[in-house]
Image (tube, rainbow, N blue to C red; front, side):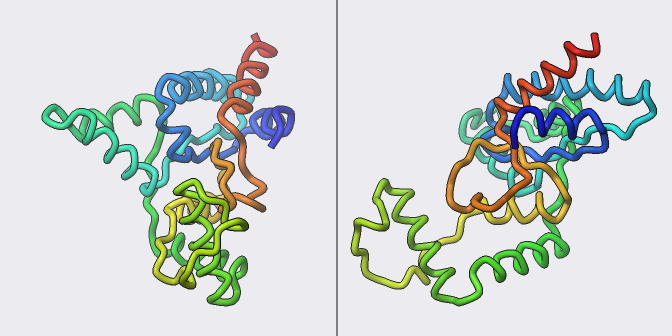
Length: 197
C-alpha cells in the first residue's frame, strides 16, 4: 500500500490496523504511531467518523511476550505488558475458530495440492537458513518442515478485514493486498496530522 492509499483509508476513518511482530517490536516507532493515531482519532471524532482501531493478534502478542520474558527474566510482569498496550490503544484480539477456518480456507486456495504446501514449507525453511531453494538440491518433500506463524497472522488480518502493518517481505505475504510498511504508515499519519493542524 502506498502512502497516499493508506492516508485515504485513514481519512475515511473506520480502518482497522493489525500490527505484525516486526512492527510491534519497533517499540518507540510503534508508540509514536499509536500516539499519531490517537491524535487522528480525535479529529475523526470531531467529524463524527468511525475511529481507527489498533489491534494485535494473539499470535503476535505471544511472540512479543516471549521476547520480553527472555529479555527481562526475573523482573518480567505480564500485567505491565497488558497495561502498556492498553495505554497505547492497542487491543489484543484472539485467534479463534473463525480465524482458523478463514486461514485454512485461504491456505487451501493458495496451496490446493499437498505437494505445493510441502514445497512452500521446504522453500521457506531453506531460505530461513540462508539458502536459495532454486540453487540447492535438498532431499525430502518438505512435509516434515514447520509452518511459520506468519500464515496465522496473515489469516487473522484477512479474516478481520485489517490492514496489516508489516515490513516482512517473505513469500508468505505475496498477494496480500491489505498491507502497509511501518515507515509508509508513519509518513501518512504525519502528513494527515500536519494537514489538519
